[in-house]
Length: 154
Image (cartoon, rainbow, N blue to C red; front, side, top):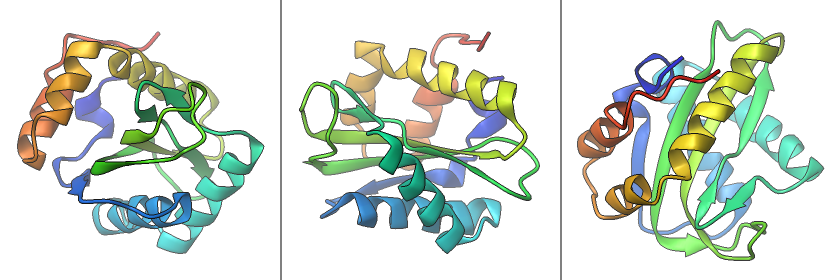
């Protein structure tokens, strides 16, 4: 599994700011709807349900909200960078500006975990995060993610 498989070029957005987790989930859901034909409301509800189990802010300005949804054919990703970081209850208590949303089929146990591992390893790379923060063009952000080292999930 790699980013070329899960991240469509149109699934990347740069937003000025978002005012809440719910609004961020709404933005992730809208992009997922536009690009992957996923129901916005189902995506938002699933992300919120998962977040209620525990925050998905992993630290250093990064969050990995994710959810399982019925009817999906594979794992799909949405990347959003905000210009103004959002308090996301991250483990290090730092605000978040890099959000990588993952949507997986309900039955996609291993693929879901592989996608989470891929994103997690990539977003721990300080150089990649710095490049993501330094660019506003979605096509450049897509290139940074898809060309970032040959990261294969286990």
